[in-house]
Length: 452
Image (cartoon, rainbow, N blue to C red):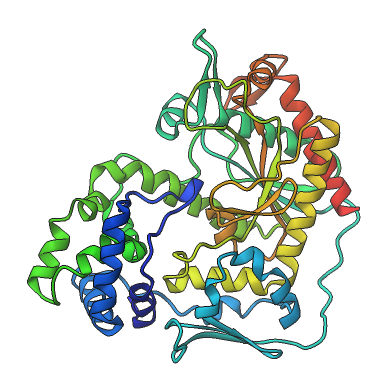
């Protein structure tokens, strides 16, 4: 672990949480304890906190992070200072980067240390005149489209992810199946129009080929430990003893620490880390012109129906970093890349707008105007959110992370469980409804509107 990451991690004293597909494994939530903890950490002083945190990470052999400057070298269309300022509110709604970065007319810099800003992490020279990004193609012919069907589907993975519904009468509706059906239909529609389409997976199984039952947890646990240094449980332990055997022992005996290395974390590491990382890797290898991530929504984590679920559709684009999500060099490089990339973010908003407006008009779905936890509203139906797959994409392309509708809404559920047609998936017939076909066709039409 490089000193730059450790220094930054130790100076941020708030709890780190991850939204949706990147949830944390544990958290420290007692408010009185949190207030007491922050007082104790402040009394220690940032230098002592840094020394203790560094010693713990070194003791547990957390690996060093690679340099992040090279991650930005291939950006061709970099925002000007004025353009960065105009979109920064969507990337950093808490305005935390005031403590972390500087922005002038000609230079953008992120630092390793908060407030004092003495040690540079990465720096990019900015142009002072607008540089026009490449023009859109005005046809789907030859356009390279990557589609990521969310989740996995199948009885086993539905149980592992909890992404399914049951009405209590023998009907089960899997979001993984819906996502795959919609994606396969989209692929067919786009290819009819001459597009070149890549699906991260076309069967009901994970994208990663890693052996789910037998993979080594330790590398994931060490990565999680590095990411957990913002969390209150980590800071609580840092305040418990000076550098040495007692401090290390306090970590080893901590229930929060043990959870990171326990068998109970296997599902989280595979589903919300390994499999999502693999999707991003495959999309980048395909080098697409645009990316669609297909999901359906529910109003709660329960697996039953809710007649009061919204009649809504929405799309997420990259952004809305929380103040606890700048701790590692990796986190900062993703933030900087998307913020500086003139083409990707602005076009992601345009692509999302074209699709959700088409779904609003054609399918009579509302556009939500209130943000979910961890997201920031850009306009009705479009939200910034720091989700795993869009965050890690290196491809400088438009990305729309779609939540097509609320499939736990009773009337939508009844439409979606109909078996009007059938797709061949892995040699097995997979029935789908007219509603899924309507959704796929509407997304197609939204993409056509976008490119035209």
